[in-house]
Length: 304
Image (cartoon, rainbow, N blue to C red):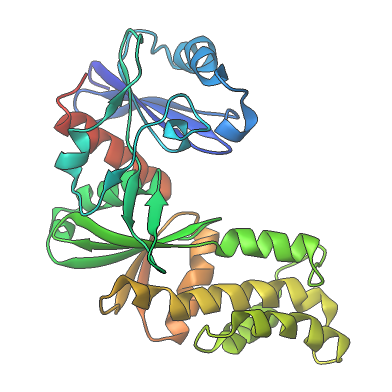
């Protein structure tokens, strides 16, 4: 690796991943730490970063750039939201410096956009992945792109000529967790049921009247139309199918191809839902995207 340039950190709710990045963009070492902001006490992030993250990577004297929930009210300090539309250069010029840190530590701000129902929508962390995905292939910086980040709070993002124009959040992952554990639809973990998942995708139809469609999970079991072992997979298919059917159109653009960024297994479920609707999709690695985003923002922000 070339001479170390900076420490790139993706610090989320449940995990912290850090990379030592060389001046030529190469990665010398990387580590995962169980230091997600949901596991830390107020004010603990700074101490754990100095005493654990930096020493583990031999990065005590490197400037650091962080993305994710570390910049939220739950993290180290709050990096204020910036308004869309925005591109990588504009975002890099507004990085939030952590006061009193030497070597310097900066945090990528989250984004705020016009949401549905007359209110705003927000994201934090996904913006770095989106911009990193764009930087990985210069051809992506031209034209219109639709990107989906499956997850607890899935994000659907519209990009035009390298700018994040708007996005929509869907709480599909959190709904699945709550409903499958704490509702009349609760079910035990078990093997994934292919037939149940496909039946859920079919039952989602256009995504409308979701509250009514959800109850079919229970009705199919107690009515003898579906084994209880398939209920969890059916519910997953129903929720993902409803999201894919209804949310992309809220972006206000024609959606004929979607870039899926994130966990490959979860992305595969979305890919199946998109396939049913005749929408092309490809899956990309989330870690590669966020690292590329941190590299680009560090470079565009003139380093330390």
